[in-house]
Image (cartoon, rainbow, N blue to C red; front, side, top):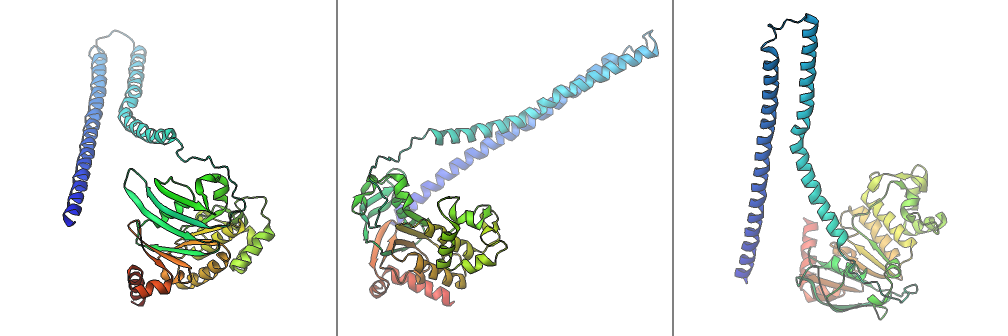
Length: 377
């Protein structure tokens, strides 16, 4: 086993070395051409001016013309030299512009490649998701982003309406891939995903996604008022509904302390607010759209303990009566979940409640032990 891992690492190292060498050689060639082109242009320009001055001055003293005429000839020569400079200046810049042109061609090639990609996500579903209940079932799901390099392998689980599922595991274990599949951002290779006992592909994409709310770790707030950020300029949502949602989440008193209250102007990415406050605003945003399925992706991973308590209370209110999927590194936030799945390298290693998994003393127990010891330290 260790030999195969070493061989794979060696192949990747050789591949990187070859690409790096090719990049270095291309860079050296570009710098060499750049260093040769500029001196040649400067030399040709200097020689041209020198020959012109020599040709004009060699018989200047022997000419039997007036001083005024000589001054006119000198003016013509000077203007000619200036025009010569204007001619060579674009040539000097040409090399640099050629580099910019090459970079632009490469960038445009990437953009056009994306534009030419066909929309591979089929949207042929006719079933309405307006009355979605939220039952989710994964049945032997296999998924790979490219070729047969599967990041999810034989994933099977079920969440009933109103239940909370927590997914834990190391970075790269496939947690985010699962929630991406529920939103139909990717097409699975094998297996079936069902929502309310119906294949997820039978639903209209727009209607399905309108019933799923995703709260990410990195909350993006736009430059605008608090009201606009939580309603996303949806005219059907009134300020009264926003205030009710904010009171339920517990952020209404804080908003009212801001200058202008709900009309307070938030800077780009919410720079004037703390991470916890931005997270609570994202909960209000999710609650306003009354989703049947709620997905929380690392919602408390980067906040302090005090903010975590506030956010945990808001989560409890937010997930009440909704099918919820929580991805968390902090195991203290998922102890109340109806079911916990432990992922490892795209496979389900353990399933059960918090107490059941601790009693097994398996992968979840080790994660809990390491985190507990780290927090004590």
